[in-house]
Image 1 (cartoon, helix red, strand yellow):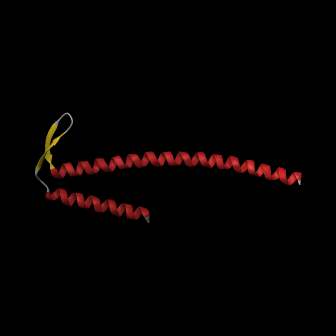
Image 2 (cartoon, helix red, strand yellow):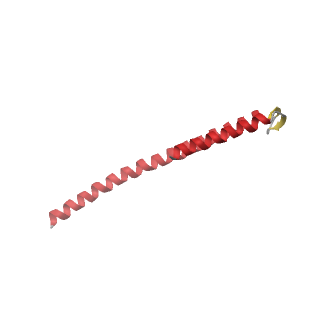
Image 3 (tube, one colour):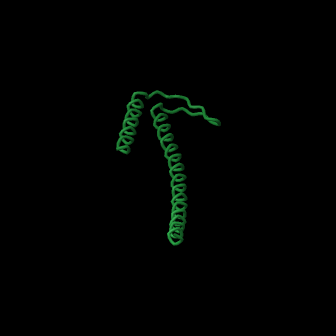
Length: 96
């Protein structure tokens, strides 16, 4: 359900960006740090939207990878502690 909602939101944002871009055909001057250029506002909006989307995906991938590594580490530690607990329980039963 969460994936459907996210996909739907992304589609709505993309369609909105396209609709706004189609209405804005005027040229704008873009000042970069070391250069300057003129481009259509629609192309600028589309490019920035795609750049933002890719940036967010990269951050998502980084956080997802970190969480997966932490999860694997915690699973290994849990398995080790479970073995120790079972060993201690077996020793308690033998001592009784």
